[in-house]
Length: 412
Ligand SMILES: Cc1cc2nc3c(=O)[nH]c(=O)nc-3n(C[C@H](O)[C@H](O)[C@H](O)COP(=O)(O)OP(=O)(O)OC[C@H]3O[C@@H](n4cnc5c(N)ncnc54)[C@H](O)[C@@H]3O)c2cc1C
Image: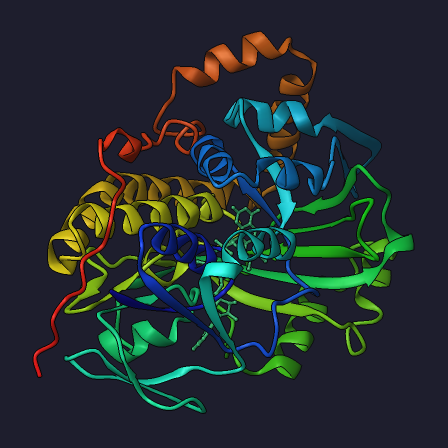
C-alpha cells in the first residue's frame, strides 16, 4: 500500500512512522526545503501523546529537550507587584503527564524516529489529486498512491485541493504572533509576561536554544483587516497592537524587520464535521485545528496521526472503513477541544482589568495550594482542563497478529 503524506511537522512524521511500521510504503512531501530548525514555539504534549511517544521509543529524547519553564512572572501596569506563579504546578492542574517542548525539536524527534523507513521529499508540494490516486507535484514526477493524507497544517494545501476554500471555520477573536528575539532578553526557566486587557506579551527561552521567543496574543475590539500572506502588514499590525505596553515589550519588537523567524495568524478554529473524501483524509491542524495556542492541538495532532495509521492497518488498508473509524474515534476529542479552545481564547486574554486580576489570582492560588488538592479538584472536570489527559487511547496493541497492510487495487 502506498501512502502519501503532505506535511512534515508533527502529525505527518507520527503518521508516517506508524504507517511504515505496519508495512506501508510511505512518502512525505514537505514544502519547506528542509526540516524547520528556526522559529516555532513551545507546544504541549499531554498524557495520550506522551504514551504514543513512549510507544515510539522517543520519550526520553523528548523529555531531554523540554523547555524547562518552571516560573511565570506577570507584570501589570496598574501595580508594581510582579506576580510569580509556579508554572509547573499550573500545568499540573491540566495534566499529570505533560511536557512542553519547542515544536521544531519535537518535529525533528518524530522525523528521526521514522526517517529510515519513510521517503521524505522536501521543497515540493502537491498540485493536484485525482480520484484514482494519481498525484501531481510542483517539481517531482506524478505518481499514484492508494491513500493521500493532508498533514499540512491550518492552511492545508491538501484541504484546499479536496474541499475547496469554503470550509467551515470560526475566528476566535484573537491574533497570535511569535518573534525570535535575542536570548539575552529572556531567562532560562522563566516565562516573563506583560498583561493588559485584550493584550498579552510574553518572552521565554530554553537552555539549549540560541534565541528567545516573544509571543504576542491580542483580542482587538474589531476584527483586523488581515491577510495571512501579507507579512509587512502583519508586522505593522503587531507593532500597532502592542504600542506603549512596556519598555521590555518595545525591545522585543525592536528587531521585527530583522528577526529570522516571524509568525502571525488569526486564532482560527476549523469546524469541519468530516475530513475525509475518497482516498484523501486530513490529520492534525489540517483537519481539526481547534485554534493555535488555545486548544492543545499538538496532542490532538499526535493522537489523530496514531489513530489514523492504526485504523488503516487494522482494516488492512480499506481506506473507506479506516477513515470512518478514524473520524468516529476523533469526533469527541475534536468537539471537546473546540469547546475548550473557545473558552481559552477569552480566558487567556481577558477583556478587562478585573479579568486580568482574576486570572492572576486563580493562577497564584493554584501556585500555593498543595498539588494533590489542585489535581483532585481538576480531576472532577474531565471535559474542561483535563480534556487532553483523559482522551482514551485505543489499545491497538491487543491485536494477536502483527498488523499488515494489504495493497489496494487501483481502478485501472
Ligand atoms: C504561535 C503558535 C503557538 C502555539 N502554541 C501551542 C501550544 O502552546 N500548545 C499546543 O499544543 N499547540 C500549540 N500550537 C499549535 C501547534 O503548533 C500545532 O497544533 C501543531 O504544530 C500541529 O501540527 P501539524 O503537524 O498538524 O501542523 P503544522 O505544525 O502546522 O505543520 C504543517 C506542516 O505542513 C507543511 N506544509 C504546509 N503547507 C504545505 C503544502 N502545501 N505542501 C507541503 N507541506 C506543507 C508546513 O511547512 C509544516 O511543516 C501553536 C501554534 C502556533 C502557530
